[in-house]
Length: 451
Image 1 (cartoon, rainbow, N blue to C red):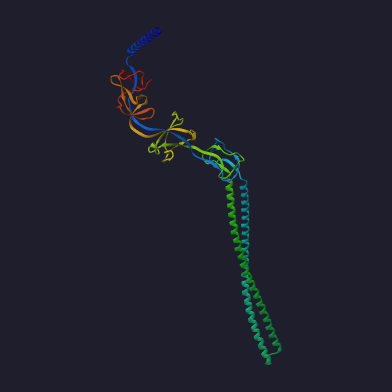
Image 2 (image 1 turned 120 degrees about the vertical axis):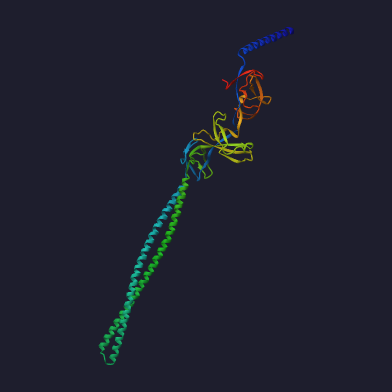
Protein backbone atom coordinates (compact mmCIF):
# COMPACT_ATOMS: atom_id res chain seq x y z
CA UNK A 1 0.00 0.00 0.00
CA UNK A 2 2.79 2.48 0.94
CA UNK A 3 4.75 1.54 -2.22
CA UNK A 4 1.69 2.31 -4.39
CA UNK A 5 1.10 5.68 -2.61
CA UNK A 6 4.77 6.69 -3.06
CA UNK A 7 4.68 5.74 -6.75
CA UNK A 8 1.49 7.81 -7.18
CA UNK A 9 3.07 10.87 -5.48
CA UNK A 10 6.12 10.63 -7.70
CA UNK A 11 3.86 10.48 -10.78
CA UNK A 12 1.94 13.59 -9.68
CA UNK A 13 5.16 15.51 -8.95
CA UNK A 14 6.58 14.55 -12.35
CA UNK A 15 3.38 15.61 -14.08
CA UNK A 16 3.37 19.01 -12.29
CA UNK A 17 7.02 19.59 -13.20
CA UNK A 18 6.35 18.82 -16.83
CA UNK A 19 3.35 21.17 -16.86
CA UNK A 20 5.39 23.99 -15.29
CA UNK A 21 8.19 23.53 -17.83
CA UNK A 22 5.60 23.63 -20.59
CA UNK A 23 4.06 26.89 -19.40
CA UNK A 24 7.49 28.42 -18.81
CA UNK A 25 8.63 27.53 -22.30
CA UNK A 26 5.33 28.84 -23.73
CA UNK A 27 5.65 32.13 -21.78
CA UNK A 28 9.25 32.45 -22.87
CA UNK A 29 8.24 31.93 -26.47
CA UNK A 30 5.53 34.63 -26.16
CA UNK A 31 7.95 37.03 -24.44
CA UNK A 32 10.53 36.38 -27.12
CA UNK A 33 7.94 37.21 -29.74
CA UNK A 34 6.72 40.46 -27.93
CA UNK A 35 10.12 41.82 -26.78
CA UNK A 36 10.78 43.71 -23.50
CA UNK A 37 7.63 44.46 -21.50
CA UNK A 38 6.40 48.06 -21.46
CA UNK A 39 6.41 49.99 -18.19
CA UNK A 40 5.07 53.48 -17.57
CA UNK A 41 7.66 55.88 -16.24
CA UNK A 42 7.78 59.45 -15.00
CA UNK A 43 10.44 61.85 -13.80
CA UNK A 44 10.54 63.57 -10.46
CA UNK A 45 9.66 67.26 -10.79
CA UNK A 46 10.32 70.26 -8.64
CA UNK A 47 7.51 72.26 -7.05
CA UNK A 48 6.32 73.59 -3.70
CA UNK A 49 4.71 71.21 -1.24
CA UNK A 50 3.05 71.82 2.08
CA UNK A 51 3.75 69.89 5.23
CA UNK A 52 0.27 69.16 6.53
CA UNK A 53 -1.37 67.80 9.64
CA UNK A 54 -4.66 65.96 9.62
CA UNK A 55 -6.95 66.96 12.46
CA UNK A 56 -10.64 67.04 13.29
CA UNK A 57 -12.59 70.24 13.83
CA UNK A 58 -16.01 70.99 15.26
CA UNK A 59 -18.49 73.29 13.56
CA UNK A 60 -19.84 75.88 15.99
CA UNK A 61 -22.54 78.50 15.35
CA UNK A 62 -21.41 82.08 14.96
CA UNK A 63 -23.47 82.94 18.05
CA UNK A 64 -25.80 80.98 20.31
CA UNK A 65 -27.88 81.72 23.36
CA UNK A 66 -30.50 80.25 25.65
CA UNK A 67 -33.45 82.62 25.75
CA UNK A 68 -34.90 83.52 29.15
CA UNK A 69 -37.58 86.00 30.20
CA UNK A 70 -36.70 89.33 31.82
CA UNK A 71 -40.02 89.32 33.71
CA UNK A 72 -42.11 86.62 35.34
CA UNK A 73 -45.24 85.58 33.49
CA UNK A 74 -47.14 82.76 31.82
CA UNK A 75 -46.35 81.51 28.31
CA UNK A 76 -49.23 82.86 26.23
CA UNK A 77 -48.21 82.08 22.64
CA UNK A 78 -45.40 80.17 20.91
CA UNK A 79 -44.63 81.33 17.38
CA UNK A 80 -41.39 79.44 16.61
CA UNK A 81 -40.44 75.78 16.82
CA UNK A 82 -37.39 73.56 16.32
CA UNK A 83 -35.78 74.01 12.93
CA UNK A 84 -37.44 77.34 12.13
CA UNK A 85 -35.19 80.04 10.71
CA UNK A 86 -36.49 83.41 11.84
CA UNK A 87 -35.34 86.88 10.64
CA UNK A 88 -34.16 89.40 13.21
CA UNK A 89 -36.91 91.20 15.13
CA UNK A 90 -39.61 88.60 14.51
CA UNK A 91 -41.63 87.53 17.55
CA UNK A 92 -40.75 84.11 18.94
CA UNK A 93 -42.81 83.90 22.14
CA UNK A 94 -45.34 85.98 24.11
CA UNK A 95 -45.90 86.06 27.87
CA UNK A 96 -49.07 86.98 29.73
CA UNK A 97 -48.20 89.59 32.41
CA UNK A 98 -51.40 90.49 34.34
CA UNK A 99 -49.57 92.10 37.28
CA UNK A 100 -47.50 94.36 35.06
CA UNK A 101 -50.57 95.32 33.02
CA UNK A 102 -52.29 96.48 36.22
CA UNK A 103 -49.17 98.42 37.20
CA UNK A 104 -49.15 100.19 33.84
CA UNK A 105 -52.85 101.09 34.20
CA UNK A 106 -52.24 102.49 37.69
CA UNK A 107 -49.25 104.50 36.50
CA UNK A 108 -51.26 105.88 33.58
CA UNK A 109 -54.03 106.98 35.97
CA UNK A 110 -51.48 108.65 38.24
CA UNK A 111 -50.02 110.48 35.27
CA UNK A 112 -53.45 111.78 34.23
CA UNK A 113 -54.14 112.94 37.80
CA UNK A 114 -50.80 114.72 38.06
CA UNK A 115 -51.34 116.43 34.70
CA UNK A 116 -54.78 117.60 35.94
CA UNK A 117 -53.13 119.01 39.07
CA UNK A 118 -50.65 120.93 36.92
CA UNK A 119 -53.55 122.37 34.89
CA UNK A 120 -55.44 123.34 38.07
CA UNK A 121 -52.43 125.00 39.65
CA UNK A 122 -51.75 126.83 36.41
CA UNK A 123 -55.31 128.25 36.67
CA UNK A 124 -54.62 129.28 40.28
CA UNK A 125 -51.53 131.18 39.20
CA UNK A 126 -53.44 132.98 36.48
CA UNK A 127 -56.19 133.92 38.97
CA UNK A 128 -53.63 135.10 41.53
CA UNK A 129 -51.88 137.19 38.87
CA UNK A 130 -55.23 138.79 38.01
CA UNK A 131 -55.77 139.60 41.71
CA UNK A 132 -52.31 141.15 41.88
CA UNK A 133 -53.13 143.33 38.87
CA UNK A 134 -56.49 144.40 40.37
CA UNK A 135 -54.88 145.17 43.73
CA UNK A 136 -52.12 147.15 42.07
CA UNK A 137 -54.73 149.17 40.16
CA UNK A 138 -56.68 149.75 43.38
CA UNK A 139 -53.49 150.82 45.10
CA UNK A 140 -52.79 153.30 42.32
CA UNK A 141 -56.28 154.74 42.68
CA UNK A 142 -55.97 154.81 46.47
CA UNK A 143 -52.59 156.50 46.24
CA UNK A 144 -54.07 159.22 44.03
CA UNK A 145 -57.04 159.64 46.37
CA UNK A 146 -54.67 159.89 49.35
CA UNK A 147 -52.96 162.79 47.63
CA UNK A 148 -56.25 164.50 46.97
CA UNK A 149 -57.44 163.89 50.54
CA UNK A 150 -54.21 165.22 51.97
CA UNK A 151 -54.53 168.38 49.83
CA UNK A 152 -58.18 168.78 50.89
CA UNK A 153 -57.21 168.33 54.54
CA UNK A 154 -54.47 170.93 54.22
CA UNK A 155 -56.91 173.33 52.59
CA UNK A 156 -59.52 172.66 55.28
CA UNK A 157 -56.92 173.25 57.98
CA UNK A 158 -55.96 176.55 56.38
CA UNK A 159 -59.58 177.65 56.07
CA UNK A 160 -60.32 176.57 59.65
CA UNK A 161 -57.33 178.55 60.92
CA UNK A 162 -58.38 181.61 58.95
CA UNK A 163 -61.97 181.30 60.17
CA UNK A 164 -60.67 181.07 63.77
CA UNK A 165 -58.61 184.21 63.32
CA UNK A 166 -61.63 186.07 61.89
CA UNK A 167 -63.84 184.82 64.69
CA UNK A 168 -61.40 185.84 67.41
CA UNK A 169 -61.01 189.27 65.81
CA UNK A 170 -64.75 189.78 65.71
CA UNK A 171 -64.99 188.77 69.36
CA UNK A 172 -62.32 191.38 70.25
CA UNK A 173 -64.07 194.03 68.21
CA UNK A 174 -67.35 193.15 69.89
CA UNK A 175 -65.83 193.52 73.30
CA UNK A 176 -64.49 196.89 72.18
CA UNK A 177 -67.97 197.84 71.06
CA UNK A 178 -66.59 197.96 67.49
CA UNK A 179 -68.60 195.06 66.08
CA UNK A 180 -72.11 193.87 66.44
CA UNK A 181 -73.26 190.59 67.89
CA UNK A 182 -74.54 189.53 64.52
CA UNK A 183 -71.02 189.92 63.03
CA UNK A 184 -69.58 187.85 65.86
CA UNK A 185 -72.17 185.11 65.36
CA UNK A 186 -71.55 185.11 61.58
CA UNK A 187 -67.78 184.75 62.10
CA UNK A 188 -68.48 181.99 64.59
CA UNK A 189 -70.65 180.17 62.05
CA UNK A 190 -67.90 180.40 59.43
CA UNK A 191 -65.42 178.98 61.87
CA UNK A 192 -67.69 176.07 62.82
CA UNK A 193 -68.31 175.24 59.15
CA UNK A 194 -64.57 175.35 58.40
CA UNK A 195 -63.96 173.15 61.42
CA UNK A 196 -66.56 170.64 60.17
CA UNK A 197 -65.01 170.63 56.71
CA UNK A 198 -61.59 169.98 58.26
CA UNK A 199 -62.94 167.03 60.20
CA UNK A 200 -64.59 165.68 57.08
CA UNK A 201 -61.38 166.09 55.08
CA UNK A 202 -59.39 164.34 57.78
CA UNK A 203 -61.92 161.50 57.88
CA UNK A 204 -61.76 161.15 54.11
CA UNK A 205 -57.95 161.10 54.22
CA UNK A 206 -58.06 158.41 56.89
CA UNK A 207 -60.47 156.33 54.82
CA UNK A 208 -58.38 156.71 51.65
CA UNK A 209 -55.25 155.75 53.58
CA UNK A 210 -57.04 152.68 54.84
CA UNK A 211 -57.99 151.81 51.26
CA UNK A 212 -54.36 152.24 50.21
CA UNK A 213 -53.21 149.91 52.96
CA UNK A 214 -55.93 147.42 52.05
CA UNK A 215 -54.75 147.49 48.43
CA UNK A 216 -51.22 146.83 49.55
CA UNK A 217 -52.45 143.95 51.69
CA UNK A 218 -54.37 142.57 48.72
CA UNK A 219 -51.22 142.76 46.60
CA UNK A 220 -49.24 140.94 49.26
CA UNK A 221 -51.91 138.27 49.58
CA UNK A 222 -52.19 137.83 45.80
CA UNK A 223 -48.43 137.59 45.44
CA UNK A 224 -48.40 134.99 48.20
CA UNK A 225 -51.06 133.05 46.31
CA UNK A 226 -48.90 133.23 43.17
CA UNK A 227 -45.91 131.84 45.03
CA UNK A 228 -48.02 129.13 46.62
CA UNK A 229 -49.47 128.20 43.21
CA UNK A 230 -45.97 128.10 41.74
CA UNK A 231 -44.85 125.75 44.50
CA UNK A 232 -47.88 123.60 43.90
CA UNK A 233 -47.17 123.56 40.15
CA UNK A 234 -43.58 122.52 40.86
CA UNK A 235 -44.85 119.66 43.01
CA UNK A 236 -47.46 118.73 40.41
CA UNK A 237 -44.85 118.77 37.62
CA UNK A 238 -42.62 116.55 39.74
CA UNK A 239 -45.57 114.21 40.19
CA UNK A 240 -46.07 114.24 36.39
CA UNK A 241 -42.43 113.32 35.81
CA UNK A 242 -42.66 110.55 38.41
CA UNK A 243 -45.88 109.19 36.94
CA UNK A 244 -44.51 109.38 33.40
CA UNK A 245 -41.39 107.48 34.48
CA UNK A 246 -43.60 104.87 36.14
CA UNK A 247 -45.61 104.51 32.92
CA UNK A 248 -42.43 104.15 30.85
CA UNK A 249 -41.08 101.56 33.28
CA UNK A 250 -44.32 99.58 33.24
CA UNK A 251 -44.45 99.76 29.44
CA UNK A 252 -40.84 98.60 29.20
CA UNK A 253 -41.59 95.72 31.53
CA UNK A 254 -44.62 94.79 29.44
CA UNK A 255 -42.47 94.93 26.29
CA UNK A 256 -40.28 92.22 27.84
CA UNK A 257 -43.31 89.97 27.50
CA UNK A 258 -42.57 89.68 23.77
CA UNK A 259 -39.35 87.83 22.98
CA UNK A 260 -37.96 88.47 19.51
CA UNK A 261 -35.27 86.95 17.31
CA UNK A 262 -31.89 88.58 18.02
CA UNK A 263 -29.96 87.39 14.94
CA UNK A 264 -30.26 88.09 11.21
CA UNK A 265 -31.03 84.41 10.69
CA UNK A 266 -32.08 82.88 14.00
CA UNK A 267 -32.24 79.07 14.06
CA UNK A 268 -34.48 77.57 16.75
CA UNK A 269 -32.70 74.45 18.02
CA UNK A 270 -34.84 73.62 21.07
CA UNK A 271 -38.21 74.63 22.55
CA UNK A 272 -38.13 74.14 26.31
CA UNK A 273 -41.62 75.27 27.44
CA UNK A 274 -45.25 74.90 26.46
CA UNK A 275 -48.17 77.33 26.45
CA UNK A 276 -49.40 77.98 29.98
CA UNK A 277 -46.09 77.27 31.68
CA UNK A 278 -44.84 79.70 34.32
CA UNK A 279 -41.68 81.47 33.15
CA UNK A 280 -39.67 82.89 36.02
CA UNK A 281 -37.55 85.94 35.30
CA UNK A 282 -33.89 85.10 34.57
CA UNK A 283 -34.47 81.48 35.64
CA UNK A 284 -36.65 79.56 33.19
CA UNK A 285 -35.04 78.50 29.89
CA UNK A 286 -37.50 79.11 27.05
CA UNK A 287 -35.76 78.61 23.68
CA UNK A 288 -32.29 77.73 22.45
CA UNK A 289 -31.16 79.86 19.52
CA UNK A 290 -28.23 79.89 17.09
CA UNK A 291 -26.94 82.34 14.50
CA UNK A 292 -25.97 80.09 11.58
CA UNK A 293 -25.53 82.71 8.85
CA UNK A 294 -21.85 82.10 9.52
CA UNK A 295 -20.13 79.36 11.49
CA UNK A 296 -16.83 78.89 13.29
CA UNK A 297 -14.81 75.74 12.63
CA UNK A 298 -12.98 75.15 15.90
CA UNK A 299 -9.76 73.12 15.79
CA UNK A 300 -7.63 72.04 18.74
CA UNK A 301 -3.99 72.25 17.65
CA UNK A 302 -1.52 69.86 19.38
CA UNK A 303 1.33 71.50 21.24
CA UNK A 304 3.95 70.30 18.72
CA UNK A 305 2.12 72.20 15.93
CA UNK A 306 1.01 75.23 17.91
CA UNK A 307 3.90 77.47 16.80
CA UNK A 308 3.31 76.61 13.13
CA UNK A 309 -0.35 77.67 13.09
CA UNK A 310 -1.05 81.39 12.93
CA UNK A 311 -3.74 83.66 11.57
CA UNK A 312 -3.81 83.12 7.81
CA UNK A 313 -2.54 79.51 7.85
CA UNK A 314 -4.10 77.59 4.94
CA UNK A 315 -6.64 74.92 5.77
CA UNK A 316 -8.19 72.21 3.59
CA UNK A 317 -11.60 71.15 4.85
CA UNK A 318 -13.32 67.87 4.01
CA UNK A 319 -17.06 68.27 4.33
CA UNK A 320 -17.82 64.55 4.38
CA UNK A 321 -14.74 63.64 6.42
CA UNK A 322 -13.48 61.38 3.64
CA UNK A 323 -11.91 64.00 1.40
CA UNK A 324 -14.49 63.65 -1.36
CA UNK A 325 -15.75 67.26 -1.09
CA UNK A 326 -13.06 69.74 -0.11
CA UNK A 327 -12.97 73.47 0.62
CA UNK A 328 -10.04 75.85 0.98
CA UNK A 329 -9.93 78.38 3.81
CA UNK A 330 -7.55 80.12 6.18
CA UNK A 331 -7.28 80.30 9.96
CA UNK A 332 -9.16 83.37 11.22
CA UNK A 333 -7.85 83.48 14.80
CA UNK A 334 -5.77 81.53 17.28
CA UNK A 335 -5.95 81.53 21.07
CA UNK A 336 -2.22 82.17 21.44
CA UNK A 337 -1.99 79.92 24.51
CA UNK A 338 -2.35 76.25 25.33
CA UNK A 339 -5.22 74.86 27.38
CA UNK A 340 -3.75 73.44 30.58
CA UNK A 341 -5.85 70.28 30.61
CA UNK A 342 -5.44 69.22 26.98
CA UNK A 343 -2.18 71.02 26.09
CA UNK A 344 -3.77 72.12 22.83
CA UNK A 345 -4.28 75.55 21.32
CA UNK A 346 -7.66 76.56 19.99
CA UNK A 347 -7.85 77.91 16.44
CA UNK A 348 -10.95 78.97 14.51
CA UNK A 349 -11.82 79.23 10.83
CA UNK A 350 -14.74 81.50 9.86
CA UNK A 351 -17.00 80.04 7.17
CA UNK A 352 -19.94 81.60 5.36
CA UNK A 353 -23.05 79.47 5.77
CA UNK A 354 -25.67 81.32 3.75
CA UNK A 355 -26.51 78.12 1.87
CA UNK A 356 -26.62 75.98 5.03
CA UNK A 357 -23.64 73.82 4.03
CA UNK A 358 -22.22 73.62 7.54
CA UNK A 359 -24.25 72.05 10.34
CA UNK A 360 -23.29 73.21 13.85
CA UNK A 361 -22.10 70.37 16.03
CA UNK A 362 -20.70 68.22 13.22
CA UNK A 363 -17.13 66.91 13.06
CA UNK A 364 -15.15 68.02 10.01
CA UNK A 365 -11.85 66.65 8.73
CA UNK A 366 -9.21 69.36 8.30
CA UNK A 367 -5.72 69.39 6.88
CA UNK A 368 -3.51 72.22 8.13
CA UNK A 369 -0.58 73.50 6.09
CA UNK A 370 2.05 73.92 8.79
CA UNK A 371 5.09 74.41 6.52
CA UNK A 372 5.79 75.03 2.83
CA UNK A 373 8.86 73.37 1.24
CA UNK A 374 9.86 75.30 -1.85
CA UNK A 375 11.42 73.74 -4.94
CA UNK A 376 11.03 70.26 -3.53
CA UNK A 377 11.68 67.15 -5.66
CA UNK A 378 8.35 65.32 -5.96
CA UNK A 379 7.12 61.93 -7.17
CA UNK A 380 3.69 60.30 -7.25
CA UNK A 381 3.13 58.11 -4.21
CA UNK A 382 2.48 55.06 -6.46
CA UNK A 383 6.15 55.06 -7.51
CA UNK A 384 7.39 54.59 -3.93
CA UNK A 385 7.89 51.04 -2.61
CA UNK A 386 9.02 49.66 0.73
CA UNK A 387 11.07 46.58 1.46
CA UNK A 388 12.29 45.74 4.96
CA UNK A 389 11.57 49.29 6.15
CA UNK A 390 13.60 50.75 3.29
CA UNK A 391 11.99 53.00 0.71
CA UNK A 392 13.00 52.55 -2.89
CA UNK A 393 11.97 53.26 -6.47
CA UNK A 394 12.55 51.30 -9.65
CA UNK A 395 14.27 53.26 -12.40
CA UNK A 396 14.87 52.36 -16.02
CA UNK A 397 18.49 52.88 -16.95
CA UNK A 398 19.66 54.06 -20.34
CA UNK A 399 20.20 50.46 -21.47
CA UNK A 400 16.60 49.55 -20.58
CA UNK A 401 17.49 47.57 -17.46
CA UNK A 402 15.64 47.97 -14.19
CA UNK A 403 17.56 49.23 -11.15
CA UNK A 404 16.48 49.64 -7.55
CA UNK A 405 17.34 53.04 -6.00
CA UNK A 406 16.92 53.70 -2.29
CA UNK A 407 15.40 57.07 -1.51
CA UNK A 408 14.86 59.20 1.58
CA UNK A 409 11.33 60.56 1.82
CA UNK A 410 10.11 63.86 3.18
CA UNK A 411 6.55 65.19 3.13
CA UNK A 412 3.85 62.78 2.01
CA UNK A 413 0.41 64.30 1.38
CA UNK A 414 -1.12 60.99 0.33
CA UNK A 415 -0.70 61.56 -3.39
CA UNK A 416 2.64 63.31 -3.86
CA UNK A 417 5.82 62.45 -1.95
CA UNK A 418 8.89 64.62 -1.42
CA UNK A 419 12.22 62.96 -2.30
CA UNK A 420 14.86 64.35 0.02
CA UNK A 421 17.75 62.26 -1.39
CA UNK A 422 18.46 59.40 -3.82
CA UNK A 423 17.24 60.98 -7.07
CA UNK A 424 18.32 63.93 -9.20
CA UNK A 425 15.08 64.35 -11.14
CA UNK A 426 16.48 63.08 -14.42
CA UNK A 427 15.79 59.37 -13.83
CA UNK A 428 12.93 57.50 -15.49
CA UNK A 429 11.03 56.14 -12.50
CA UNK A 430 8.57 53.29 -12.97
CA UNK A 431 5.22 54.64 -11.79
CA UNK A 432 3.62 51.38 -10.67
CA UNK A 433 4.83 48.13 -9.20
CA UNK A 434 4.70 45.48 -11.96
CA UNK A 435 4.15 41.89 -10.90
CA UNK A 436 7.17 39.68 -11.54
CA UNK A 437 9.44 42.62 -12.40
CA UNK A 438 12.89 42.23 -10.88
CA UNK A 439 16.01 44.31 -10.71
CA UNK A 440 18.08 43.71 -13.85
CA UNK A 441 15.09 42.91 -16.11
CA UNK A 442 15.01 44.66 -19.43
CA UNK A 443 11.93 46.79 -20.08
CA UNK A 444 10.64 49.32 -22.53
CA UNK A 445 9.93 52.73 -20.91
CA UNK A 446 6.70 54.47 -21.85
CA UNK A 447 6.26 58.10 -20.69
CA UNK A 448 3.00 59.16 -19.07
CA UNK A 449 0.13 57.63 -17.17
CA UNK A 450 -0.85 53.99 -17.47
CA UNK A 451 -3.89 53.63 -19.73
